[in-house]
Image (tube, rainbow, N blue to C red; front, side, top):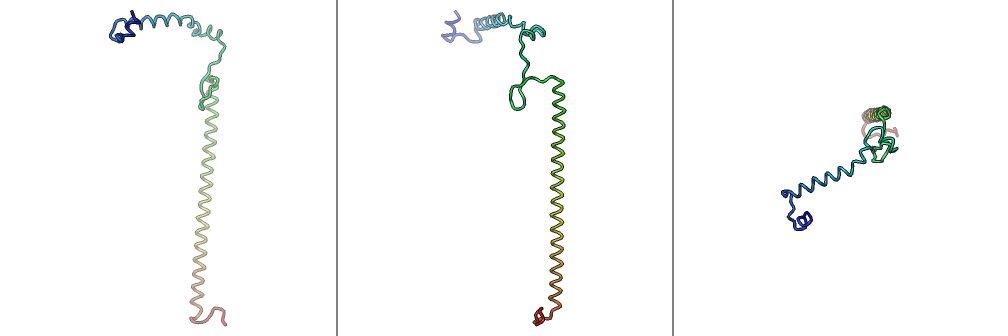
Length: 137
């Protein structure tokens, strides 16, 4: 029978006994799973099994499944948190730009002071005749 065909390697998808065996296996599986059909009924199944529906969260942990009202509430909270984080990011960027402007302004002021001091030193050098000292000795 089937076992001899399987052991000798003569059983292949083109053989009629292969497909007949698959059919009977599906029938047996269906008949044996019939008693569990009662758990699929909406009210009766929920009353027999008092387990709560579960799902996975973003980190992969198994948690209780959220109802649609809780999902809306969570989305609203997440949106608020995202908006606050974005505001903090914008404030940080604005503060960094302000610091950059201050640094640039102080560099410009320093450059202007150095230019003024250089021009003053050059004017003093021109005012003092060659060969004499600035101290007037």
